[in-house]
Image (tube, rainbow, N blue to C red):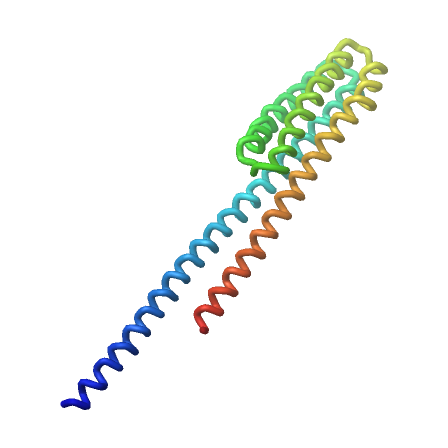
Length: 192
């Protein structure tokens, strides 16, 4: 019976150490799982931004092309149709720009979205002037304004959109690498 008493405290200590190590590993695993989940959500958010950037960029290209076609159009019916296309595309682009401004991360991404918003507003003003000149049968003046000022303003928008796309790609990539590191740490903890 004395020999049993000596073994019992030893078994109790071994069991306590084993239980505490399981609790510690379980807690670390839960924390790591939450970190990976947060990283996955951030990657998903940036992937959605990338999709929005691509859609908005496509719509902006349609507006620029329709602007050029409006100048070249010879009859009023074609010009009206092109104006409708432009207005529909403008209406579709604006929510994306609003989304960029409200959902962008602080810092560089927020700065870029402000640039997009400002450059887009500038382009829209010039676009309206081009369309007005074109409607008033002043194609030479409309072409000059479109070729110089509208193109420059549009290039600023495109440049900022490209920066936003690159920022989202870089952030998503960095987040994915961090998630990989977290998973590797979790594997090391589990195997230890």
